[in-house]
Amino acid sequence: MASTPPSRRSFLALSGLTALSLSLTAACGGGESGSASGPAADGKVTFAWWNIATTEPGKSLFPQISSAFTATHPNTTIKTTSLENEAFKSKLTATTSSGRLPDVFQTWGGGVLRQQVDAGLVEDLTDALGWASDLTPVSLQAYQFEGRTYAVPYDVGMVGFWYNKKLFAKAGITAPPATWAELLEDVTKLKAAGVTPIALAGKEKWPGHYYWAYLAMRVAGLPALQRAATTKDFTGAGFVQAGTRLKELVDLQPFQTGFLGAGYATPGGQAATMGNGKAAMELMGQWGPSVQKDAGADLGADLGFFPFPTVDGGLGRATDVFGGGGGFALRKGAPKEALEFLRFFVLENESKLLASNGYLPVVKGAESRLTDPNRRVVADSLVNATGFQLFLDQAYPPAVGQQVNDSVADLIAGKKTPEQVTKSITEAAKGA
Image (cartoon, rainbow, N blue to C red; front, side, top):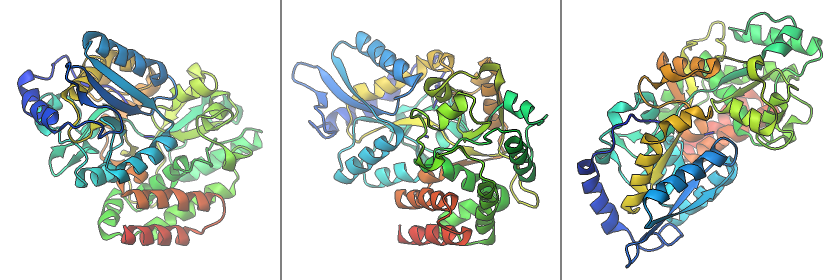
């Protein structure tokens, strides 16, 4: 899901690094991360870095950044593990259970990171981030608990509809839909024109949860989702109606043939279907275009973006956004070089991350440097957002987030009713 770069030229002051570095070095033991980690007798340091850069541009860019760092830090070796989104989550969950996190690891923040923090597995970076004021508050939000910061963001963004302008025109659609009713009308128009309206990776589940989450925001309102996280009760009328609205879409059979078995970035999956012009829309995050290009083709000027529509009579605003970014956290006791690497990745490679067109800025004002119109729309939407909700499968404890994904997938597959979805999520929340 699950990112972009960050800070200004301000280097992390050595004075700000000292206190944490000493504690990191002192706490660093051999092999806590499952690899030889920390300083050896000869002063050489090895640390493990887990990321999800299995598609472009990260697939090429991340190793370049790693190599550039070790070129200027000859005593440091970085052991990189790059895993696909779901494989990464599974492996990290198992690793967390064993209490042996990698030195540097991808995180989306929220409830998953909070669980790792509460277990004493993650380093508190607050006092080391002297440059945190350069970052946008929304980019840091998912990684902060009780005023303390536990990860460094390198990307932030939002989920919205990426659409094919040429296919919209073929169906006689002159402007993107602003309301849910208009979206359903457009789906009907696209089908009538022989166009598959929406690409969906039904096999992976997380892309489907975007629909229910956004509909809950638009119908019940963002405060309702925040309250439900506290009360652990998702059975309210607004949440049921979110499922009812989603069922309205599902009943129109808008997805590509075989969508229930389709992956996201896999050959013939959601991104490829969209990139190859075989579907008119996909609901996806800021990374959508780069994965479309990597898995299929580049739609170029035919690609557009529009925010998730409002729902008539709903409490949510069009400017309330749903999404998240990517960040990196450090395990408790990671070597100081791991923190220096994060500084290097975020501060000194901001321009490369932006130029790759796969990430959005987390630095205040950097959105003005974006030249791609779609990426600029996303960045401006974030700057002007009236509310922000992190991906539900990250915002909530792991068991709850998984239940959201599973239950919504069952709704889309016709195996659960809207009421059953809310009941299952509530049961998981109360048991978490």
